[in-house]
Image (cartoon, rainbow, N blue to C red; front, side):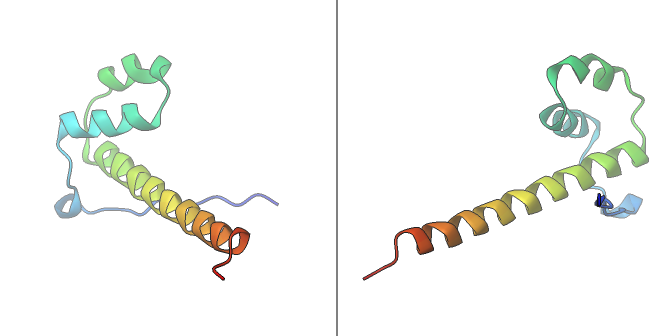
Length: 80
């Protein structure tokens, strides 16, 4: 069973990143071999929203991993 996460959709007013910042976010998420392609992409609100959605999901996933790690550490080394 596979499950896919749907990225949050942003309206034009909700977009936070400009063109340069959007490219930085995409380069952070994708591997270096894709950086030339990222530089050549025409910047649209759709692409800006996609990058923003990816970043939100990455932050959420990072938080979840930290929470699970903290839970594991508290069980592994219980306070006496």
